[in-house]
Length: 186
Image 1 (cartoon, rainbow, N blue to C red):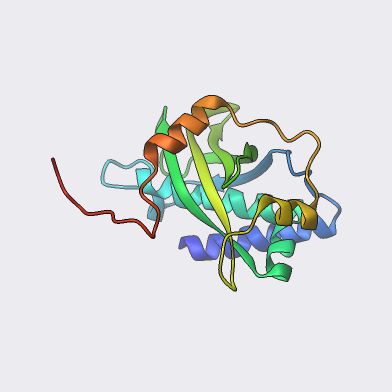
Image 2: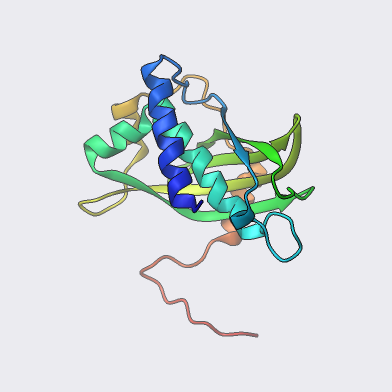
């Protein structure tokens, strides 16, 4: 089962939960249950490191739909792009192992939203990813947080992003798309 089919199933499931009144506050933790499938594993017979980020996308879809942000994005012609991400691994997920993807909004700065995703088995974190995403407009340009929060409301309990996340974002940043970024190895 390819990730596109999982995305459709997760999105439909999230929409069903919304219809059943199981929405999420913007600062709540989204949880979806998944199983490590044969298409997720690598030659070492555990989940491929690149697959984690694809499956964490599923958690992001559930979070966007259940908080109402996905509808606001569609209605206003907005979309999000991941500008930075990092994943840290503790333990391997094995074939057919069940796990939960937990996702939450960490906060924002003047240019981006920050999210955290975790792969969890029986309450234990196996892997964690930090995501930096920018909000863009289909008509062009960057969506300001003022526009975003005017449309969806700003949660009163939105936490400040921890300083280390800002340090990580700055350290991992590439030049803007308008600046030169030559591939020169030193």
